[in-house]
Length: 451
Image 1: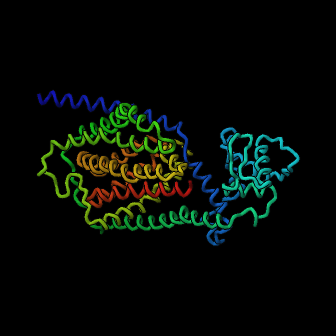
Image 2 (image 1 turned 60 degrees about the vertical axis):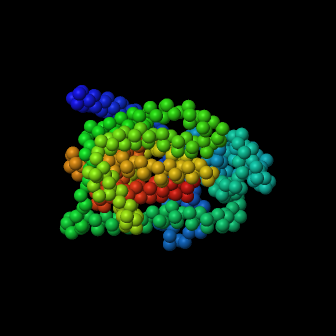
Image 3 (image 1 turned 90 degrees about the horizontal axis):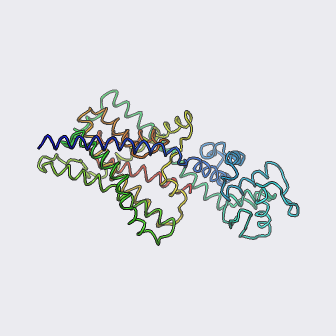
């Protein structure tokens, strides 16, 4: 009977692994067709920099603004086919083109250029002090409520800088630029300093010895069933399909973007149920009195202050490495696309409630669940079976694969390595959850600043 049960478990694990490889392979392939959010972020950064430039002291401009100019923004927009531009991008581009080409938009002379024709109508309306403009794009655009569009359009019809540049908006954007550019730059410098210190301690072997890593008495077969069977097959495919009609009923009368945020939150909760049930079943076979100090997951919430410090230092140390690998990948292979759809939702959402729901999903639920599975369960078992080094590497690779994005895979591997290092060096899971939450939270805040 025991042999039959064992054989069935092996067969189920093999089937789960095969299906997981197929599902993840298909997901990674599909990520190539998902648009990258990087071009939008770059354009938003350029727009904020242009608006902030008049209020940024000259001594800080090389650090915060660099070589960003109206010409660079025009070149960025020129790389987008006209038919793929949204209404606002067409108007901004047409205004910048007007300045470059030195064309006169005389009100009595219609423009023949199909790109510049809509901007002429908009600029005519602007010169008539009209707030609402209906262009050939059949979209209502309020130029004066868009600082960048107002500035470039005003300059396009020959307005002076005193009239076209809003000092209050410029100061506000300078403050936003300081948070989105200045603070990360300081964080990178601090992170490099902590990295150098950590490497020095490791080389000299003068640091404190790492705590013993406690692993649950589970096998690699159990991990295959948990990750491949529970997380991938049941969590990512079967459960969402089964609950899709109920989610549709729950969100049927809810408007966008609240509907999308609710679907993300509910969908994520549904995805976590199968692997958590499997993990609970696996833990049911363990004797409670055999559990080590702090439990099998070694949460160890206390001392809380120390956990926050370790999480913050860990975040600082991993930040320059993630940025470096992202830059190298962009230089070597270019933007591979496949950004997490959540980034797009946060970037374009303006309503508080949808943002709160997305915040709960990304900053609370995701770190708790993912750290429980990857650093709380998978890493210790892999380290026990394969050794610490291979355990760290394999767990980081699985963690990155789980996000199903080719473009984000290398940075996520680095993040996974950093979280595993924190798990090993602290002997606690709680700092890993805090560091993961901090990473997602700062990414969330950065998107809001650029949104």
